[in-house]
Image 1 (cartoon, rainbow, N blue to C red):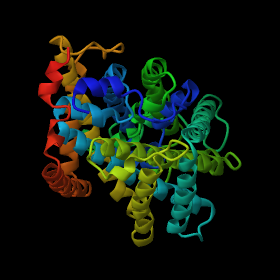
Image 2: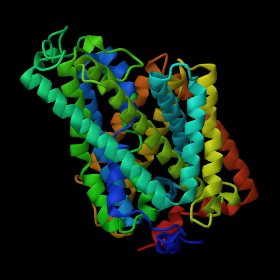
Image 3: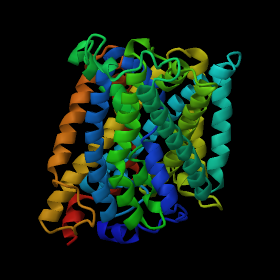
Length: 475
């Protein structure tokens, strides 16, 4: 393709099956907001910040909504499976599209490692004799097989995974409110709203400690942008995508802020510990028969859901990169079921590194991979926001058509979100344990830069795709 205009006209048909209906896209969007970062990672963050973690989730949730509305405006301008990588290529230049596509692939590969680690930890709850790496390997193989069959099967699996998570969290909130209101169960004697401030205040370890949890909080929100990747396979993106994005505020309010508020009222924050799901701990405290085991099953499905989504998105992103000459051409091939099977297979091989981490450093595996995934996620979100700002400039100048789903406030909210993400990056650099991810990202950037130099040497015209001169010709 030689012009941005041709690409825009041909983008909607990419060879995929538009097999994701409204029901499935809605649940994928909901499931993207409920992951292992909440179910497992929240335990360590509660220990660091106490009840003030609720404010951190609410603050980050507002920023995530800004990001998603920016992405939504771009998606309705041009819905493609390559999503933010394509928008980075169009509005920031070919190198940024290349860098964003590969970095998003890295994010999901590393997130898949985290989810496999978490799933293995949850299995350890029932079967402590099974090594973590064995459970991680089994889950990897099963989900890989499911992803190869069809996008409809992927959508159906995600629908039911998300249904389990949504039903369980609502159930937890209702039971927790029952404990607070009627005082039943073992936790009834100590459950009270005053638990939010009775033990050294709402910010028991200071505002600084609370802010340092933002890295983990942002990791919990990774995958909300997955709805953008489904654009190329949604049956009716003009209707399903805005609806999925506009429901994000209540999902954050209910599943994150609401659930954590109830849990921290039922159980004192001092009773939570890193590595233990606060949901499992809360139900164990309440003393409901088999309650902890049920919640453990729910958080296991959350981990597997996220890993399943990772396999889906990595295969699509590799195909987008291959379409633009930025990855081996073999990744362009679709299987008879219209899935990018080769790209998924390669991604699964790299996710297998998580199995190795679970064998070598099982106690540190989750922390390592979440920090790297967060850094990659922040880059992806920054590219969405900056692309949105550039798109708005072209719309104002009359060079591009307006989207049917404009972000409220235009570019203002995108600028606020950009500043916030840079602030979180600064916090990561300040944290001695977390800054290792920045070293990893620096090495990753160097590798991608070298790869780009090779690509330019083989095909100098690769730098012309979605270039500014072409973009300005489009009216």
